[in-house]
Length: 235
Length: 209
Image (cartoon, rainbow over all chains, first blue to last red; front, top):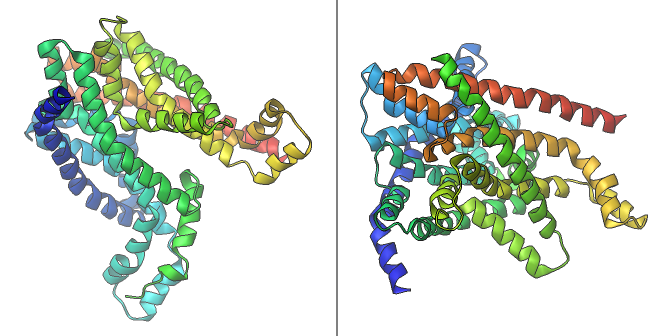
């Protein structure tokens, strides 16, 4: 038992790096996802078409390949990023590709009447977006957003292949040192699980409480509920 | 060059298909356990799903390939198939669960009212009723699995990503090699998505008729 505690302590810096990579990727990716989702509402094909293409390409490739593109490919174009920043940029792009369509769907399902009410009150477009549309849309999209953030967190385990010393990379090198791979990998897996499971459970609970199933139908159902009278908070 | 990279398609398909078969079977067993009458077993099924989803797929890969080396030494391809199959079983179990929960309660009650056996209830009522949803979610899961199969390159499987990485190291043309296999991945995704869409439509049409 004290051995395990000692080994967890050894993994400490790796855990911090993993969390730091997650936070950095999220801070980079989430605002971008919201912006892309807002841009998706545009009626101009010139704005939406390139976004659709970019998202389809990013969703079409493995996250590992996106990471390789950023880390090995960008220097060919004269853009050299550190391992940490390459990893964060790649993970953020993958995160955007999966969450922007979810947020866009949630925005599209905010009743038009709420926007019209804002206009009737003489509110500007920015105010309407920030204080009427986004709060409702993000609340409705919360369960899948939490799940995708957990996937982002787990995905940072790939960062070690471009040279960061995150949790998984540390467990690997410890295993290489004393050949107790099973033990060190199991400890690292336990740490990932201990952090992931509560958030996955939270996402599942939020979804169930709203009476939503999974997928679009569940999202629609939760959106209908989010659009109910209690959610109307005039700015 | 394209030839060298394209030779990875077969391995990528092999890993994806193998892992899918394991995930689909193991997931069905777990989904069944989660609907059984014993609370403890149901809890155990739920704990399994939580644990499998709580650990990154790449960690399953290394646990199976390096972790079991002394106890059960495996070649990289079977190790990747087993590891990704385990990681996928949690997702497949969730897909089955969501699909079965989507069956309207009235249909289940009707089957019970007709005193159908458990087997007939699933075979004649619940599965046909939810087959469209099941086909759609399974197809999107297979596409996700296709992309997860790239992780197998990290234990030395020479599938698409592994070959592109080798090519990059020898010829120093990373963008070209990665772009080519990205096109292969998109092509494979389409090869899964299009027949799946047809199947889904056929199921929905038959139900409407």
